[in-house]
Length: 140
Image 1 (cartoon, rainbow, N blue to C red):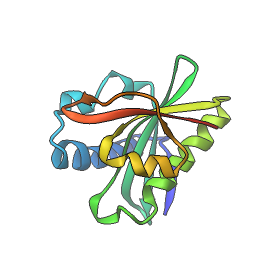
Image 2 (tube, rainbow, N blue to C red):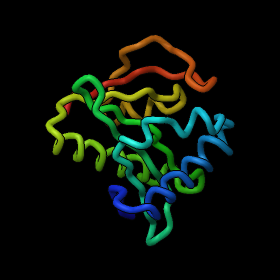
Image 3 (tube, rainbow, N blue to C red):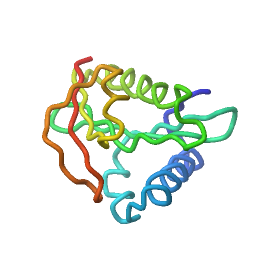
Image 4 (cartoon, rainbow, N blue to C red):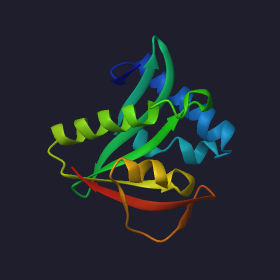
């Protein structure tokens, strides 16, 4: 498996295809909420198994901090280290952009995953796209 920073139209389509399957189809998030104005300025990442896209995520800098968003992995490859691979590459990229702190809004069922990676909860629970979330941060 390898994580690539999106450099062309096909890779971006691969990222959107994974997000479509995980967020829109599996989690029933409205497409208008999933695909937003930040997609045009974000740095996108795709995880490939051979040439098949199996995971995705995006990164932006917001108010001087890195913002990790849209982390998703196809259901049949979860628990195989795929999510950790995506997060590691995003964090390396964040450091290359001189970012020393990253934050994300974690779906509550995924909090344990992010805690293992060193993230700490800094907010109360809130709803985003009808799904419970908590904001988490990590110093790099």
